[in-house]
Image (cartoon, rainbow, N blue to C red; front, top):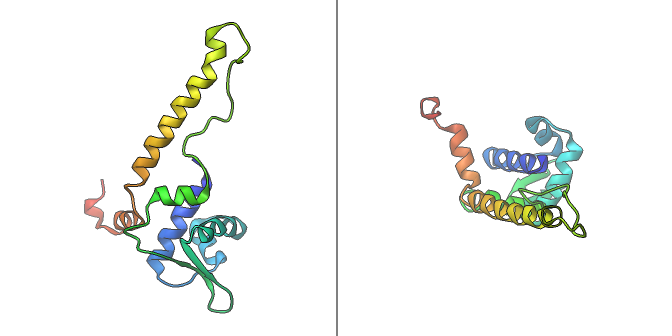
Length: 142
């Protein structure tokens, strides 16, 4: 999972909470990152129609949709990134050793299954769920 995912979820929860357009500077201050990083992530969310943008003095990013229906799997899809991904593969398909020649395919399959399982879990968590966790009384937090 990438930092982009965390930025996107944080920004959407904050936009939903504020219920008004926010600039990349305002989002960056709350997310604790650079406005350029916010703009990069928000461009992907805009393309997926999760946010609306407006230029001008009263412009900025606005959350679109029902926070009860927008889930974390949709955000991940908008970012076009897997949850679990191998960045390096061991072994070599051309080697005679079955371990060396078979390991990459086995690990790819394991990662695909893990990715699918994670996406199923993320589909069960909405923006409204996160908002509710943040703002529930402290006595209910574990």
